[in-house]
Image (tube, rainbow, N blue to C red; front, side, top):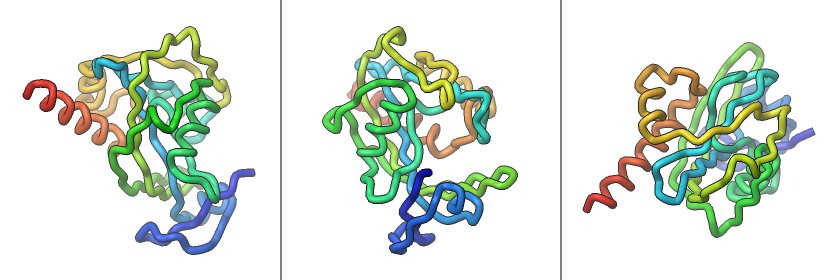
Length: 183
């Protein structure tokens, strides 16, 4: 069973620790992390396709890896753990860059998911043959071009999870990097 540090609506620790189930059934605020793995030339992004068994967004394309921050864990530690668990790739602390944070709320059926999200980027050229998927979490993985991501987002997030803030952070990152490379 997973346990999370409970936060208040401003993101401060309350001192409470609750199970995943209790956080999601009561809508308690907790932390989550997102990692986007980009190719070293910034032209492609590695996305995972969520397992059809997932309660939220089954079968849709999602961030490279991510998930909840466990009690007593730091965000970057959760990124490294989740990436290893979900796609079998070792990422080191030195390979990730924190790019921002948001809050999000997703309600579906009996799940009230309230997150303080931390966003990270890693640049790494990964051969998909070297990836070992956790089939309970992930059913496929694929490199997408920036143009393909823009098209899917502009097409009302067609085949992507409805994690609007995540995708908007990615687009903003692409925009900033493109402007820097053209300067």
